[in-house]
Image (cartoon, rainbow, N blue to C red):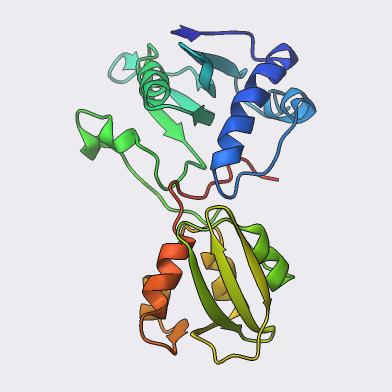
Length: 249
């Protein structure tokens, strides 16, 4: 079911608990605590045209999602019809049921002509929920940047979609042996011939799993020095969900 608690600091612990579960499974989602939700996420900015509103989806096991939004009322005098707009400030759904219920609620708000949602993940399911997906307009923006300052530490900290071992040469940083899988990884400098060569910038783009190595190779930004190394790297870097940073920091 959907409930609409007050969009103020009293809701912060509830939203922080939902977001913590999302952050644990979503590459690129920074940690946020209760204080951040109370003083930033839920706080209305001085120039916002309308107050923030909140809806929470409660599943059988507890809270499974929330949407924070605002509505700007409007009326088209020429055709004598409502011309309001709804802006989705943040939506987190831990289950398909939560995603469906929250989007249905937002799209059914009365007297609203347009619904705008910014900073959504690349695997947003909304298009597949609509009866007429052609009504949806999508725009891609660059919302998340990664620079690996310590390559072996960063590659060791990551979890990998498949067990594997690969030698990677990173321009300006050196050559590294990476061995990893779903349970963890180890990465250290290596004198072995590289299987893959790329720039630090390209490695940063690949790190969270949102960019296909084959696309980078097709653009000449990855050199496959050992045949079969590119599919192996692709399998290792794969993630079940797209990376996403839901807010500006």
